[in-house]
Amino acid sequence: MKKSSLWVLAAVLAAVFIAGCQSQRAPAEQAVAAAESALTSIRDMATHYAPDELQAVDAQLSGAKDSLAKGDYKGVLAAMPALNTAISNLKDTATAKQEEAAAASAKAKDAWGPLSSDVPKMVDAISSRVDILSKSHHLPKGVTKDSLAAAKSGLDSMKATWGDASNAASSGDFTTAVSKGQAVKDQASQIMQSLGMKS
Image 1 (cartoon, rainbow, N blue to C red):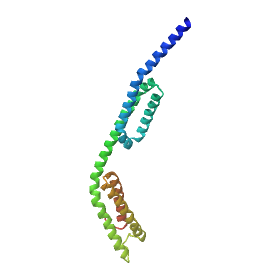
Image 2: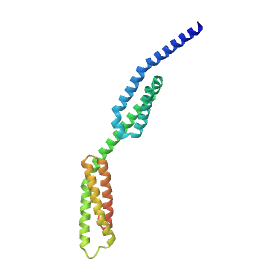
Image 3: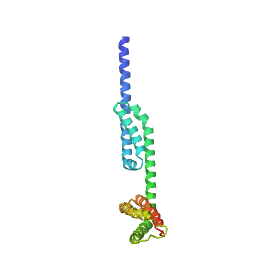
Image 4: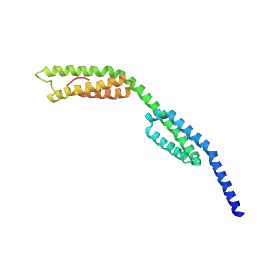
């Protein structure tokens, strides 16, 4: 009699345990689905502005999915607060970096105006000076054959880099445009100095 009572008790406990697990299944599934949806809504922005952080959050979500697949609903629910916090932090980080990039782009767009006017004039002036000096039999004081040769080769690289800068500006990437444009301006200033020109 005692033996059969133990079996009944074991069966009841097993049923209670299964019922308990099943009662956690729906909340666990809903929690994982909600986390996945939240992450999907910011994935593109996070991929662009916070890829490393996104990778870490993806790993957390993957762990929760694995626990769900194994029926560890309690483990899933226990992991959810940390995962939801990580997703929220990821959104904040990516949004902040997106805003920083937008501000930098706006600043670069403002800087591009003067550069796009000044640099072509400098390059044209150097080109004209190189043509004159190349035809001259006597170089002015302070200008050497080496500096003239360097100016000639510098002109080619400046024109190529300026082309890249202009293309970047045309596509709306003013940050790259200004970076390349400033590099050309700095190089042009050095060359002008080496040729005895006023920059």
